[in-house]
Length: 614
Ligand code: F6R
Picture 1 (cartoon, rainbow, N blue to C red):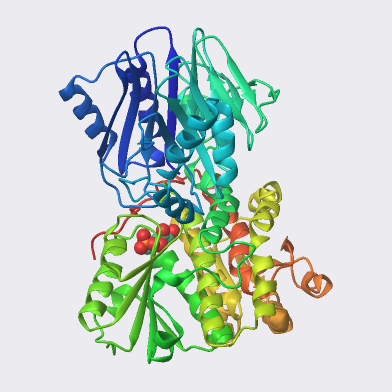
Picture 2 (cartoon, helix red, strand yellow):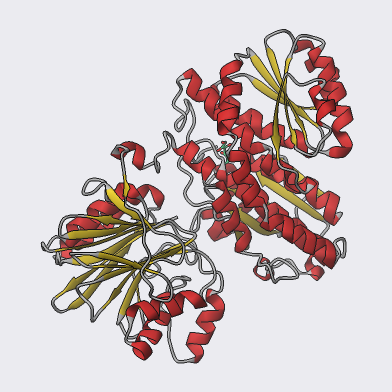
């Protein structure tokens, strides 16, 4: 989720062009930045921790040269904390190759071992640093840059967008990608590489959108694109018609919508960080939770706020039901003040996108002080929670800019699915065959998110057709927790009063609120509970409510249609995953409701992205 820019031209202005491009990309990550420039005496690399302004000040201070070509990077840390040394670009051992990288190399640890055994040494904690090392080795053998890049790529598993420079080829830049966006921009006597279109839009509107396994070779006059065998590949020029402001959001009108659409990719990244097709169990050995540790625990708490709390509710439900481990979930602001039972036989799992939420951080510190081990499920590398927790499970959602959390929640749920499987396998509550089936379902999850996103227009039309006074989200089991998240999203960006209720609780009070003008959203995905929820929905419909149901394609649709005024279906899926999938339409409902009302979707009133005060 970092930003890449590359520039090659006939005028000596590469540093300015790269810094300008990086400023357009800073929203993608800003914990460190770096630049590499060809100069007559070789490649110069400079990098600094912190925002881009730190790099700009540093370059000015040292009188950094301009050069004719170079690459730059603004980082959102994944492997290795934000620091000067972990910032990109990274060198090869022999300083013949320099690389900037977006994405995650999943087998980097294995490749790093191999390179160390062959005599290489590494300076950083990043996965990226192996890339220039491998390319340089092949380049020494083949003397052919494309072949060296191609051979290196074939050794790497994971996702990458790469900008590459070879010290002995000052007139050329190289680019390659797989599962991480990268474009090449066409200019007059100058050409560009960028992870996002906004970085080049001030200079060109004509770009090639590279595809997986494309390798691009740029000089000042031409751009060649080849495949892994070095055969030329034809790509159409894409002419960008968006303005700069909307392009920063990748063409989406709001960051929230962009982030909703990123979910197939980021859920895939989160799952892939710990689960590969050939594995018999998720890779969790860094989390300090062995069978002995688990057997010795007397209690597990999950502590979080807001959306992260809703992800924790889903986690608790799954861990109890599948791994048969009792788990208590609490909002951090309550947990920290009620003197809960915490000792060395306690595991506390804190969940936080930002890793900076004051109450969650306080709960972590209190738990550690009382002797508990703390596992953080965190999105921001280098955040306070990630530094202070005993163990960290990173979600790889990338920077979440919109205040309303969307993609981070989906990645938190992906983490919960993996944690549940881990606990269940350790406790013998899941057979190898059951895990095998679950793994297949997990790997198929991003594609199902993609299918739901295709229903955007349908969901927008539903929003256009309703004008509720207030809204209730109701469901049973997991569906109740899903509704809690739907309700929060509607409140925070559409300022519509809404409540989430366990469907069976309606008649214990809230049904008194139901009247014409009330919209009741029934989440009806748990097969064994459908009839019961439908009965509850009939009760509200009889009292004048409008009913919208979110259900799975393989449910008893006739039964649901008997009560629903409108219906949104999600693909059939493993029962465990419905809180993730059914939430995608909920996100879109809230988004389009906010747009319809003309509110500031990305910056709703009274809210802040990171709640660092109590
Ligand atoms: C809702 C939302 C908030 C956060 C909450 C916790 O869309 O974003 O409810 O989920 O403030 O924040 P983190 O996860 O950063 O600890």
